[in-house]
Length: 553
Image 1 (cartoon, rainbow, N blue to C red):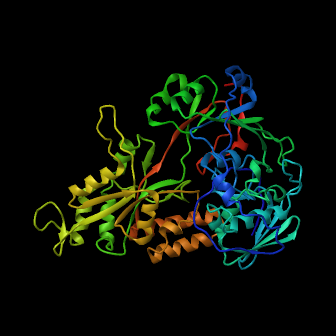
Image 2 (cartoon, rainbow, N blue to C red):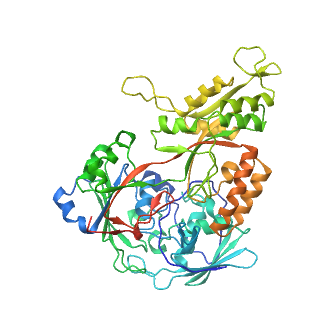
Image 3 (cartoon, helix red, strand yellow):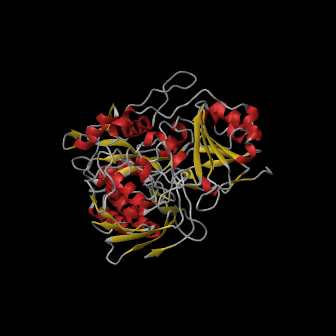
């Protein structure tokens, strides 16, 4: 399979699980373990130098300004970057080998070249050969070679390097071998489309800068269309790389502006000081976002991240070993009420991790209505009835009682004072009315993980947040033979379109086994200035290199 196409894109990484030490051929010089340095290093500096309003407006014609609702922390492309550090560095300063191009009128999502000019999956699927784009240089003028690629990928694959969020994506790689300075081969343990997905996620680093430490003393040297300038006064400034191999970007300067107060950020946007506000808090949406003064200058922005909140069932013991009971509990989740009342409309009902641009990119199945009557019939059929009329269903002298495990939730209050109901409150109350008692036990992240690892729960609340077309085996694998078979087929599919075709079969398998029940998918609402052209959302973010500024709005 040979692939060639146009360039550019922005990617976001996913945290999964570690793998064994990689085999190396013609290895790069061994670098010291930077884990301790990563843990102790201070975050990126935020100084007191803030540009004046006049300065901001003077630079407006050539500067794209993006609101950050959280500090980015240490600006690193690969070593446990924060969400904002990834958005700042990936596809802008640093680039991966491939680009995951989103669906458009011409067809479904697909891989396209970025730093890789072409790639071939060899017969048998046990080897991928990659040819680099000629003439690519890093920001310091040094040429990109396959030694940089080998160094980066082997750094990701090496346990102890602190790249835990990316390492599982290369778990199927046996070795990375140099053929020439511009051609490289990846030998695989088995045919694995996940490896190609990884090549669209992992930013390639210059070995001569990052070999001593993956932190590189704070240096940010990549191949991308913008170069790092500064991080001062809560503003991260990037400027156009005039020698970019793909041609200069349409926008000269990009600034990421940290402002924790959403009201202040919205006011700044109205004054023309911000072009993109990725997410508004409920207090300012939809009323202020749809006000005439805002809609005249801004359009809605829906980032639609592949993020699902769901219940996982423990089907290894009664009563949830019966798929009818699991199905019944799923029908007792009032997704529409939860999306509207708990998340103020900034989430939408969702059942499976399959939707366009979702964890599995594919057509979305109909989300069922809240249906206590149908749930009751399923429980009756499973033998759980209220024999003694005490309001709790029972079977064989045992009441239908479940333990739900979840993380600690802050107690929120509305303007009048009483606690605001959470999604788990809605689920527990609906179940109780149907004769099912759910006891909630909550704790910290490590406590929840321990209960999950030990299988010490009936239901558990989980939030999956990764990348489009990610590997769902960690959350769905081992629960049903049919699901496992579909996941295996998806993992070995080389093209995103092939995996999308399998999504319907995955939905069918999930609807038979009910290993999980989705609650809502995050649906943040933001704003983008009308002068910003070329906006297309994919994988929860924007391809900044595809944007341009129109001076007419």
